[in-house]
Length: 237
Figure (cartoon, rainbow, N blue to C red):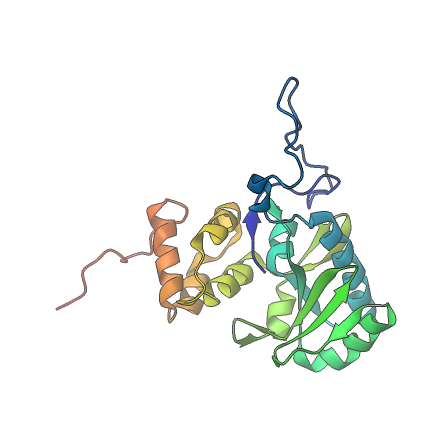
């Protein structure tokens, strides 16, 4: 569920259905780097369009099941209009009790199902891309209430429920730990979604997470969000 800021791959479309204007080679510019150029080896692969195709296919199956679900992770950020490059997988939140119903339906469509040792998700593969059906976001179970808050948005012209921006931020902040705490990848998402996030609820839901508190403080110092009322006051003696 990693996020990398950048433009979608050639042939990809933005969440609003328009083809993004990407920087093409300028007239008289330098030629493309030769294959094997060590400078290219540091760039992560961009699977944007391939992941979007799998996203649409899985969403169609989930919609046909009648079970509640929501798109989460990096593809959800993309659906909300954040310019991210999709690299790894597509993630859907489903309730644990619905897994037994939706998993056979996915298998019938030729999606390879893998049950990992973790008990909070089911994994799948399709056309070389990875699919995660998640029952728990950062240790918190996927609930009917969370899925009911999802917004129906177009994802490469196909409409599907997408996790609410506030829940997206809560899940990403709650996942921060001493071993995984990359503020740089989440910062452009927070900037892009700041007008649509209930930051008071984010603070309330993550107040026991020191890494989340540090990130929220960073957002305040960068003027991305308003400081918490009374947050700068000295505590009583």
